[in-house]
Image (cartoon, rainbow, N blue to C red; front, side):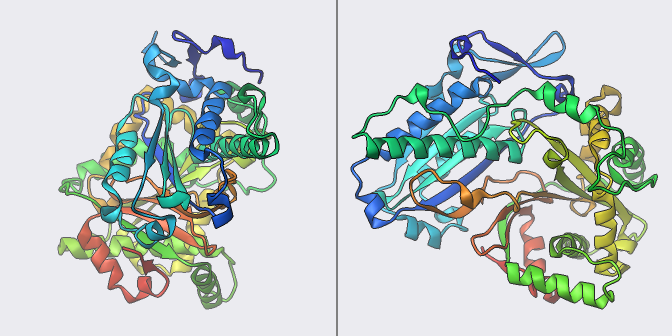
Length: 477
C-alpha cells in the first residue's frame, strides 16, 4: 500500500472493515524486550535514544492508522487522528542511572523490584485505552543496555501483527544506526524504508479469507463434529453460557490477581513429548506444547477445585480457550491487523480429571485442526453479530476461576531476532494480565517458553506443590 504522508493530520479518518466492527472492548497488548550492549557498542558516539525515537516516528509515518483513537460514528468503529494523537504523546524515555541491563536480568521476573519509574511508565501505557500505540525506551546504566516496550490496542493488531510493527521499527532503527556510522551522522529520516512491505489494509485480508471454502486448506484436516472447532464453539457459546449460568456455578468471588511467571525449558517440553507419546504407544503423536496445554489445563482446574474445598460436581463444564493465530492461512504475510480465531474446548470436570493427558491433548489438537480460512470468517461474523452477545456470554464463563483457562501463545514468534542495532535481546516480557485464568506465553532465551499467568496466589502455591506439574515447570517468582 502506498502511504501519502501528507494526509496524516488531525481529522484523518480510517474506516475498519466489517470483520473488525464489533463492540468488543479492545485490551492493550504490551510486550517489552531487554537488550544487552557490548562494551564496544556502549562506547559508540551515537545518540541511540534519538535514533530509536526517530525510527519510531518513521514507523508511525508509514502506518498512520496507529496515531489515531477509536470512535463510534454512524454505528461503525472508525479510527480518527486528532491533534491530541500526535507523536509526542506516544513515546516515553527514561534514563535509569543505577541499574545495568545485567542487574535488571537478575530481577526481571520480580516486577515489585523493578525501578519505580519503569513500572509507572509501563503501567500508564496499558491503562491508556485511548491511544492505539505507544512506546517506552529505558536506557540502563552506562549504556549497558535498553528496555524497549511497545503497547498497542488490540483494535490495531494482534500479537503477530504487533511483531510485524516491531520488525519494521527494528529494521528502520538498524538502518539509521548503520547510516550514522557510515556517513558521519547523516541520514534522511523520510528516505529510510523498513525491510517488509507496508500493508494495513484490513479489508484485503478478510476478503482473501472469505474467498476460501470452509474446508479448503491443505495443511488442516477439517473435523465435522457438532461440538468441535470455531464454528461449533462460537455458535454454541450462547447455549453453553445459559446452561452454566442456570446451574448457579457462576457465583464466584473476584479477588486480587497475582502475576506469576512460569518457565518450561525446551528440554522439559521434549521430555513431555517423549513421555506421554511413549505412554500412549505412539498411536497419536503430539507436539510437546500440545501436551503441555492439556497438562496445564488439567492441573489448573484440579487446583482451583482444591482451593474451593467444596464438593466437586463432575458434570460441571470447563473451557479451554486458545487464542489461535491464522496468519499462515492466507498469502498476506505483511498484513498488520487482527488475524486470530478463538478455539474453545469444552469437557466436564470429571472427564478432564480422569482422562489421560494424551487423550485431552489429542482433543485439543482436533479442535485446533478445525481452523480454516472459511471457519475463521464464520467465527468473526459470529463474534461481531450483536444477537450473539458474545462478550456478556463469555463473561459468564469466567465468573468462576476453574471454568475457563485462556492461552495466548506467542512463544513461536521470533522476538529474539528483532535487531535494532543495539545488541542482542536477552529476554521478552509481557504486560500485566487483568483476567483470571489468562496466560500469555512468550519465548525464553533457552528455546523454551515463559508463561505470564494471572491467578489467585493460592492457586500458584498449590501448582508449585503439585509433583506432576512441578516435574516440568520452573517457578520464576
